[in-house]
Amino acid sequence: MNQSKIIGNYRWTICALVFSATTINYLDRQVISLLKPYLESAGLFGDDPAHYESTYANIVIAFQIGFASGMLLIGRLIDKFGTKIGYAASLLGWSLAAIGHAFAKGPLGFGVARVALGVPEAGNYPAAIKTIAEWFPKKERALAAGVAISGTNIGAILAPLIVPFIAVTMGWQWAFIITGAIGLIWLIFWRVMYDSPETMLAKGKILQTEYDHIVSDKEETTAADGSAFKKFSWFTLLSYKQTWAFFFGKFLTDPVWWFIIFWLPAFLKEQYGLKGTQLSFPIALVYTMTTIGSIFGGWLPKYFIDRGMDANKARKRAMLIYAFFPLSILSAQYLGSFNMWFAVLIIGIAGSAHQAWSANIFTTVSDMFPKRAIASVTGIGGMAGAVGGIIIAKSAGLLFDHYKALGDIRIGYGIVFMICASAYLLAWLIMHLLVPKFKKIDLE
Image 1 (cartoon, rainbow, N blue to C red):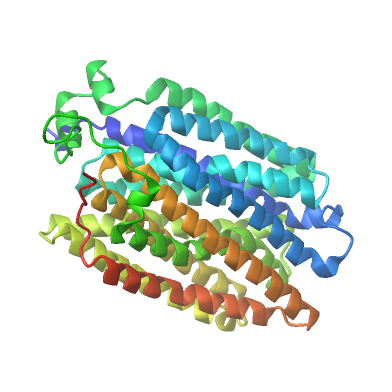
Image 2: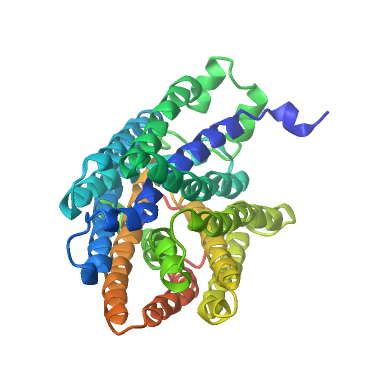
């Protein structure tokens, strides 16, 4: 008899729910980058085309400010109220905010809508990583996280396939309304299908063997003397090198993904003249590649562990391997001058490496912290990544406006590509120096 059938597989149903939420998260987030040409043509970025890039950058930054603020607040609330309530509240909030974009009349309106979207969207990763930690034993978490995170790529694949079509046939407003409404459907499935492993066991929804597998390395839920664990603050978490390792790992590498999300359509338009539905296949190809990176990123450390390697060494080795691949983006413009598809494939490789890295850097939180602190620490790191994204967005907007005025925006993209290429090796080195081994701390 197949071993997976003996154990049971309901935990992978939970993973599928997280995957779906993450897909919706990135579908809603991606819409504005694909509508950028339509919004410019409609005069919604102001009257001066010379400042369109900076205006767009400011709108991107508005989202990231909301996202960074939400990370600090919502991660803490999810630890307090639990994943079932926290995840549902976050998704409801960002779905309504996504729909609200349809009523924006200019840069200020889009800025407000992006802040409103960013705050609740920040709940996705803290809730997702906490859910994975609750439903999977340590050796499966990186793979489960990789599958869940691959939803970002599916959302990014779906967006260029459906958003331009909706914009052309129904108007840009409906692109926001339809994509935003999808999240409301997910809430029904989450309400019916999700609960903690303990509750699902009591209801007879999962087998005892699967529950035993899930909690095979479960930490204690009370202190050694039987009392409840002490409460902890952000200041307590910030006193640990482990928190700062995750902080800098996200601060340095998240901006690369932010840049790909918000500027890939613009890059293809500026460098190769693509627009509208012409963007659909190249963007879909990039995110199809990054889906493979997400899943492989979680599989590789499990492969090392299954062959006897220490979990810490397996995670570190996998992350170091992934850190080298973004260096390929240094050749994107040169090779892209011969054929656009070389540039598309190279950006896809860099994006795949980021997603493989992300599957593991998120798992380091559950390696280093008890479950009751996972969402809070994930929120701190997510805030750091969003701040890094703000910096790269503002810098990119200024660079691109400057070099576009000089007649060669390619130089601006070249500078940003150099930053992206080096980010992962620097992040890995800092994390290794701060935390030579991902050992779980004792908050008591």
